Structures are given as C-alpha cells and as structure tokens.
Length: 126
Image (cartoon, rainbow, N blue to C red):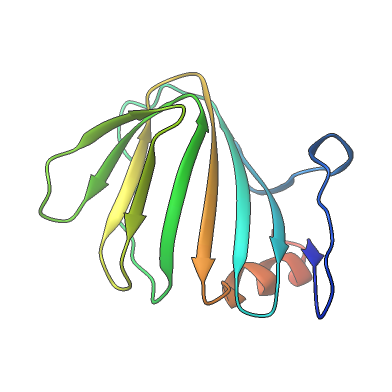
C-alpha cells in the first residue's frame, strides 16, 4: 500500500506486487488521508454465479480497465460492462459483480478510505 500523507506519491504497476486477499483476487492500494484507489486484478473466470451481494458505508466509483463483468445492484437490471466502462455506488447500496471473462482489472475509488482494507493488509490477510 502507498500512503501519500501530506505529500504526493506514485504507485508503479510493474514494480508493485498485488496482495492476494482471497483466491483469484489481488489488489494494489494507493491513498491519501481521505481518498483510496484500489487496483483489483481478478482471475479464474468466467464465473458461473456472481459474488454475493454486499454493501458498505463508503461511496464507490469503479472503472473496468480490462475484461468483462456483470454489474449487479439492488433493484436494477444487471449490466454487462467492459473495458472503459464505469459504475458508481452510493453508500449503503447492495451490489456485486460476476466475472464474464477469464480475467479482469477493476480500479475502485472509495471515500472515505476503507479502513477494513488497511486492517486486512496489516494483519497479513490482504
């Protein structure tokens, strides 16, 4: 994780190893004191089923940098998204994805920062 506390820093993709936080998922984190961006590389697709729906108190905007996913959001029809597409989720709204391609890369931005991600990283689980 890169933390730009009162400064500016760079995360170089080729020089930063993703941290596996569950099988088939690795993430790279860069953040300031109040904003967090997480690059998530996903493999093992296509999936037969979507991930379970979840929600959190953070606002989220996600960019599909590579691959294809099915975006599911409570009460809305599923949307097939590919490279270049984005989705946004307000605080507390249930959402999920289903990987449609063999791999995908998502770039997720959260406000405020995901303290749970930092705790996982410090405990060695993320």
